[in-house]
Amino acid sequence: MSFCPRRLTSLLRKARSLIGLATTASTAASLSSSPAAAASMDDLQTMKTRLCIIGSGPAAHTAAIYAARAELKPILFEGWMANDIAPGGQLTTTSDVENFPGFPEGILGIELMDRCRSQSLRFGTQIFTETVSKVDFSARPFKVFTDSRTVVADAVVVATGAVAKRLGFPGSGDGPNGFWNRGISACAVCDGAAPLFRNKPLAVIGGGDSAMEEANFLTKYGSKVYIIHRRDAFRASKIMQNRAMSNPKIEVLWNSAVVEAYGEGERGVLGGLKVKNVVSGEVSNLKVSGLFFAIGHEPATKFLDGQLELDSDGYVVTKPGTTQTSVRGVFAAGDVQDKKYRQAVTAAGTGCMAALDAEHYLQEIGSQEGKSD
Image 1 (tube, rainbow, N blue to C red):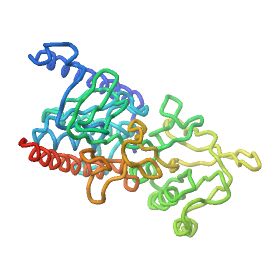
Image 2 (cartoon, rainbow, N blue to C red):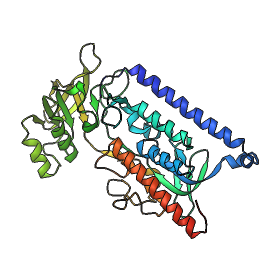
Image 3 (cartoon, rainbow, N blue to C red):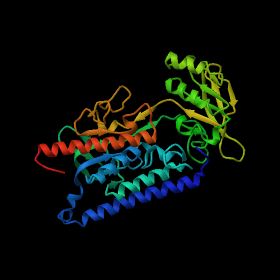
Image 4 (cartoon, rainbow, N blue to C red):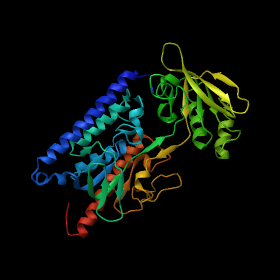
């Protein structure tokens, strides 16, 4: 996660949004020019497809690429600021991505997702910049709803991702006075090896297994790692606690909370934190070059309204070794069903699996109904 000027990032996001709207408009125009759609404006509101994909990250676009090349003519809803994130998912909130294969010099997260999107379009995916508000998986074919259209689909891939939980305090955001992506991150594995953090003091907020794991990981790169925890005991498993506590490069700040992040000189990057002891009320300065939130993720599954089996943390449950969900014909890929790895490349892998699983399913029901793909 190396330095990227905020203005450049803002312009890229605006351009991406315009591209998305233009694609939606051109898709609608092409549909309206067809004889079937010209019969009635109402026809534009209900569409039919073999496969509908919900999502806009690596999982969704990989599924779309595979499905489109299999001539399933998928429809993809990429959302419009769904979960307060631009189309393209969490990668649009990062700067340099250095661990995605094929880009030895790294690539901007937003550029990577634009390339994925262009590849989906190249093979014939119809993309709509609309947010899915609800689904009906109670009967086949399935129904997917946005505010402006209904899609009737023989199969559905859910790839809506999960959003990293972030704390709000002065300097934590991505605005002009914030240090998000300029020293503050929510993924040590993604960003920890960046030059910005090497041989510098770093901090992790959290008290669970993820916080322990991320702190240990960061000791490979940082000169020192502070774990900031607002209580006097961790909730992490004993084995993970022991690993962290026995690491000489890790120091724990108990009963502590970050109340502000501030910059360093003219560089425009994180320079330190103001940390409050919640017992004494004392506020101290902690000089660090990196802060990592490790307080969990929230999967984007609320719109499913309980129609798929979820685990205790709200992630979609899939059959081991597949992307099959509790509803036959509905598949899940990416971070919405993966709370362990949460990487762009693993999401892309499950997107491939979902498309292949869906293709096999469609072939099966086509054979049963006397149809062929």
